Length: 273
Image (cartoon, rainbow, N blue to C red; front, side):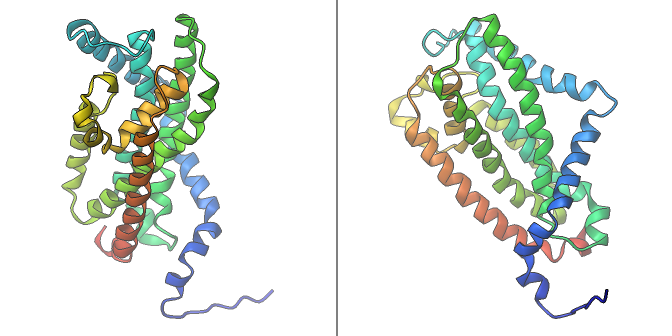
């Protein structure tokens, strides 16, 4: 069988999105590799996926629930309210950090062979999704402990999980592109996630936010995702339609912006990295 090699200026650019489908197996391989590295032949990865949300929940419950005596939502136990919020937040924060550092961590692969580089940051979200699944099993155990039955809209968790990943992917692509050239951005990512943790309704209910600040508060795209999770899993509040609309809009805008920035700088990655 004969093969024809075509070398044509700009051909790779025109075929870029088709190449994403052609290299779909590479996406699966990179995803599986990251998950295997995290969990294979070790208990630390699994324990960390369990302990991190549990310890954060315990700290937030003590500080906000016991010391500050902030109210829970309805009759939901405060630890359960916090843990439900921890799931989407953990997915967002882990995905953002992983995508931002993905190209630098895979510099040997990026500099040697051609493939659509956007596959690398997208594939790193797999580890965050596995962590999320492990934590969700723990959440089910907590709900049994508190004898709390989820409402019918619990299936909305599936699209909300996808929304949380997309909210992280857009900014992650921007930070990923910048991190290749300016390595100082790796210091900024932990600050973003740490700061975002306290301005997002993880340790407290959105119900305590005054109405005059509510719209500004909901401009944080993570707010809609977290409140959506609490509505879906706990049924402790009405569906946050406006917050979810803002989150979805921000997710799409940042995703398009992230793809634009990433594609604009992608051709220089192999030389700079």
